[in-house]
Image (cartoon, rainbow, N blue to C red; front, side):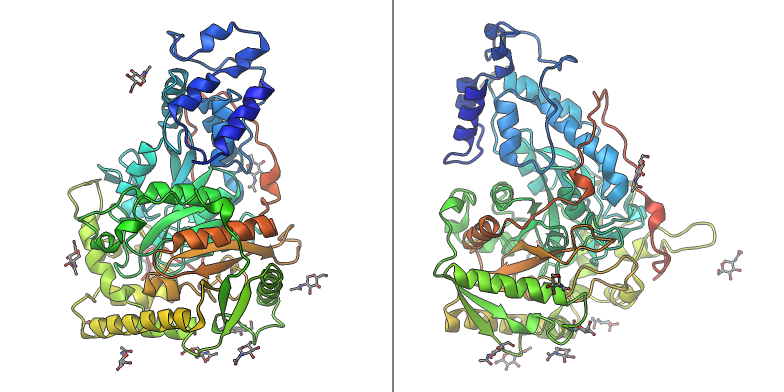
Length: 595
Ligand SMILES: *[C@@H]1O[C@H](CO)[C@@H](O)[C@H](O)[C@H]1NC(C)=O
Ligand SMILES: *[C@@H]1O[C@H](CO)[C@@H](O)[C@H](O)[C@H]1NC(C)=O
Ligand SMILES: *[C@@H]1O[C@H](CO)[C@@H](O)[C@H](O)[C@H]1NC(C)=O
Ligand SMILES: *[C@@H]1O[C@H](CO)[C@@H](O)[C@H](O)[C@H]1NC(C)=O
Ligand SMILES: *[C@@H]1O[C@H](CO)[C@@H](O)[C@H](O)[C@H]1NC(C)=O
Ligand SMILES: *[C@@H]1O[C@H](CO)[C@@H](O)[C@H](O)[C@H]1NC(C)=O
Ligand SMILES: *[C@@H]1O[C@H](CO)[C@@H](O)[C@H](O)[C@H]1NC(C)=O
Ligand SMILES: *[C@@H]1O[C@H](CO)[C@@H](O)[C@H](O)[C@H]1NC(C)=O
Ligand SMILES: *[C@@H]1O[C@H](CO)[C@@H](O)[C@H](O)[C@H]1NC(C)=O
Ligand SMILES: *[C@@H]1O[C@H](CO)[C@@H](O)[C@H](O)[C@H]1NC(C)=O
């Protein structure tokens, strides 16, 4: 068995990464566990068995270890016969069932997950397994449309909203064999970075139970950090793929606007919105991105028409091993640091981690280029050019009125926010008090407002200025901390100090990479994670992923949360367990149904 295991490992780590083509399965057979002599080997050959494989209660193999699992370790386990797909899925379900109360990250589990796993085991036994994500369990942020589960945005008002079609990105995952385990909590409707919602409650940072997990894709971030899935998805309107990666010691990719269609995603802004993956390794980010990009051109999202043909159908994982940091020119946006708050224990660890990494990058042959232009002030950029208020209502009304949205839900954003608190009900939505002005303005604004076009011109200017910075300094990328301070405490007014706005407005790609932890405290036994953004020119995802990969190998920074290092006991499930989020833990400073 060990030689087969080794062979599978070699094949899977070779060339086209973890692609599971049927020839590989045929070479390996599907049940090398029989090679121990307990079963005649002929019964395990592809197509030789007429009965579908079922798990044996007296299985001699250890259960699949889901902790820090990757696409490659899942594929190694199933193609070498160490685990069945059902065992892989059960291992993740057990972690969610056992540990979700530590973090409150999962909203819903997919009741079909085990049936899908069983059907994949039959495919595997037939030697027919294909797809780069075959049997890879993933969680989706609950603003991705799924035909088999409601898509709620975390709002009670949308709890029965049932799409009749998968978002194209979700369909792409399923075509490559991914198993959608369920949906993750998010900051309600993805509007802020605290990751609290009326339906799902407050998600808790797995590294520090007094802190938020960043957001808005904070349920995904916490779930991936705790190994509740192999990877997850997020959306990013200003910071939302990067803040949860930074706060949970994870990697993420905010792709260039247009690279992946946004159809079937609860929207906020055509200018700002993108979707992408969050994972524990850059390689898994790259494989997931490759799959999401297979959605290609989509007439329903005209940003997808702007993708150059050379940037279609790239295998983002293919060239990672050749990446190097030597010779790179990296601009550092000094305006995106807080150098005045250096005595503040919330700020100092971020500056320390960034300074240490700049020294480290220099030591391996990269050139750090200080960029001091006053333009690079995230607060000022957001105040001057953010266009969410103008675009939100029209897009949301169109989403709510699509024929492919079944179930019961309000038809317009105004109707949703009319479901206010009364004495008989708590109200069906949650808006942070610091965002009342934003939402109230969005409810009466549109792309016809005079100031909208002016801001669009401002965004064009900002885009040109950023490209000038790249060109004038001959840069490969610019870097800065995702957040100037540690991720904020639960109950804070907002997720302050984040720098995501530059990429959000210019549509630039960004890879987020873990760069360290604050010092350990009683609340944070291994410290609070800190992440860096690496921003590139449009469609330079491949270069950015290479930088991230080389930094991952150099730093080996990522660590699992202390409690998530424990192994969960895996049951022999007869059905997918039901997970109930703790919606009762919403801090009282965020009253439901108030606007
Ligand atoms: C989670 O639930 C288990 C079982 O009910 C309990 O023992 C544990 O203390 C809970 N943990 C937290 C953090 O609530
Ligand atoms: C395996 O795939 C082949 C080709 O697609 C198909 O003809 C065959 O029926 C499949 N076998 C099973 C058992 O699904
Ligand atoms: C982009 O698509 C939207 C919706 O499909 C459409 O309303 C809009 O006019 C298009 N914009 C351009 C510039 O083509
Ligand atoms: C910098 O940190 C100080 C001290 O915590 C804080 O008062 C200030 O608001 C921060 N500035 C920015 C731009 O985040
Ligand atoms: C963390 O601890 C180290 C070693 O004790 C110390 O040098 C460093 O200044 C501390 N960092 C912060 C931000 O307190
Ligand atoms: C840019 O800022 C850095 C750090 O604030 C400083 O060390 C450097 O001298 C500045 N460079 C220029 C050209 O002003
Ligand atoms: C950044 O912009 C804000 C808002 O315009 C301003 O208050 C702040 O002083 C600026 N920061 C710096 C360092 O110039
Ligand atoms: C409803 O709540 C408001 C505010 O708390 C209170 O003033 C009012 O008396 C309540 N009305 C009823 C009928 O309980
Ligand atoms: C857009 O116009 C409406 C109506 O004049 C106004 O109430 C609203 O504040 C404007 N929105 C913005 C963001 O300026
Ligand atoms: C954009 O730049 C042009 C030329 O530099 C300038 O005239 C214009 O005022 C700028 N517009 C905005 C909205 O910043």
